[in-house]
Image 1 (cartoon, rainbow, N blue to C red):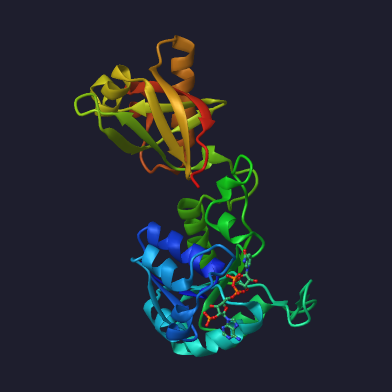
Image 2 (cartoon, rainbow, N blue to C red):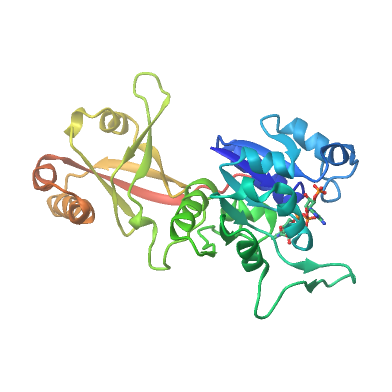
Length: 313
Ligand SMILES: NC(=O)c1ccc[n+]([C@@H]2O[C@H](COP(=O)([O-])OP(=O)(O)OC[C@H]3O[C@@H](n4cnc5c(N)ncnc54)[C@H](OP(=O)(O)O)[C@@H]3O)[C@@H](O)[C@H]2O)c1
């Protein structure tokens, strides 16, 4: 998807870089491209200048706020809160119209030094001001309460698996942003009770028994404590089952987190029945036809899960 990220600071760079890594076509916006490229300092001491950062991210292009906003089907506001309305004015109302605008800004006023004061507070907020100013856009406020690096890598804090707040007036826009946060950045956005077992699919990677290359499939699953159950409709003939019989060390990704696991074909009669039941019962209510035949003939496979892999970076 084409994304316009307004803001060349640490947040704009971090989010733009991650979106590009996810395969989006990103233009990062600034007031004045030449001035931004001429800066010798990075957004934080020790970080590369904007020009150096762009060299390190050749897939991201720089443009004015208006160019970035015109390019994006999805927009991100990562400008200083006290300049956000000005930045959006420069971006142009026509370029915001009908689009989701992820607003990460905070109305922090540093003009009287540290600590900053709030430029908007109490009965109003910057997000509301932006939504009022651009009623044709769909403002979704999120990620503004965490530091830039964590925005795109929540698993870097503790064991990961953290919730992000998402607010906005448009339910469809919130759902779309939630998907990006969950599937792209690794946040949890659902109700607290919705654990990983509520995910529709997991991604199982086995080692190809002929090539030795990783082989990943998207597959239904259900969790029962630390054991993840899968049902193979193709029985032992399925490639992934043949692979894991040869090499039981596998990995499985659920909602952006990857777990090492030992895989085994279930042989115990009691566990066999439990595996069929948990997987069938998870999917049957939302399935149009009957899953009874599949439940009966498929082959239950168990993955005994290890800890999640440490987050990269
Ligand atoms: N830093 C964090 O970890 C963090 C965490 C949570 C939320 N936030 C929020 O995210 C936003 C971005 O933060 P940041 O630290 O990356 O950078 P920042 O220094 O707060 O903002 C830099 C961006 O704001 C633009 N800007 C500044 N004044 C402007 C004005 N008067 N008119 C138009 N544009 C203006 C700059 O444009 P130019 O490119 O033209 O210079 C630049 O692109 C802020 O609202 C911040 O409060 C930051």
